Image (tube, rainbow, N blue to C red; front, side, top):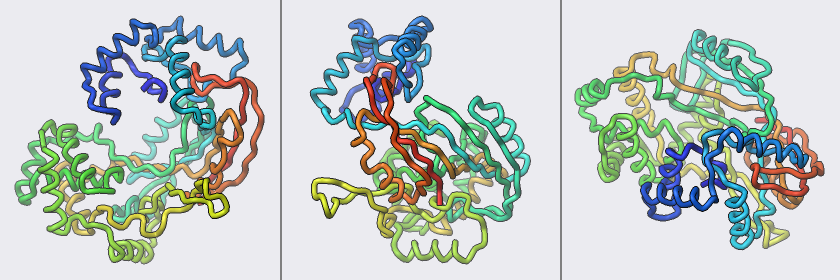
Length: 410
């Protein structure tokens, strides 16, 4: 995991490694492997002297970066020996890695939305404390607004803030809607009481709750698996994947969830088109992914080029029905109180400057086309030659190029 830049304390690393789909390795096996890698001098736990040595070494060599920042004290990272071993493995297994590009968003403007003016003001105070924030404006009333197509508020407030940073390896924020459950203090027993009164099984509720995230709605198997995991994560109860698959079948049968077809797609478009409510997250509300697919270039059959997803991309996925969305919000309100959606974190990065680094110009091929296929406006772009640079402190290049992009949402 270290080459990903996932450098965490040694107590956490084995658990993270065993979650990866590289094979059936246990956390215990990963702990043994970590001990062995430390003993062989391939990995190290970064302390303050080690961090200072790395910073000093890069400065003396005039090395730009690291794109992804310096390692944190207390985290596990490569040693020089381990980094050398990894590079030799990469050269043998992935010789094309030299054309990998690395992204660092250095300037970004973001809008955030809130149900209440008080929540917006509280967020402003927190945002202003950030090291990279250079400006904050608002709150400004927005009137009625929507997040997803099924979540509408009669009023709300918007704040805007601007950040400038470098060498953090950050990507653009894009559209984000996240329910911060850490600030919610609902009693699981109270939830069970609410569900019992409505004759709703816990597995069925977990399926409804999983619709907050769009990450696992592409298949019934993934959605059921996520719902089962959330039972333990949020309520400390064990619900099997099979129970959640049965719960999904029930939710579909009751009409709370539906498999998206053209009729459902047209229904959402009609709903949004007839409503004057502001769309805080247009892509999210319209079920338009900020992604693209690839097809062969008709002029070069050995080359893949990006293109927008077809209008049918969402067909076959799982979504709320209007009745299911209303039921989910009603149960949540009965359980957590009428202000439960104050825990929503709604943000949209609408302008950003993106720097990409690569050892060769060919590594930037298709980057601009990909942004355009995803619906992003490319306002400006240029490529500049640079000297020594590094993606991470150990991943160094004697020279390279930087693609500088200025981008915005439509």
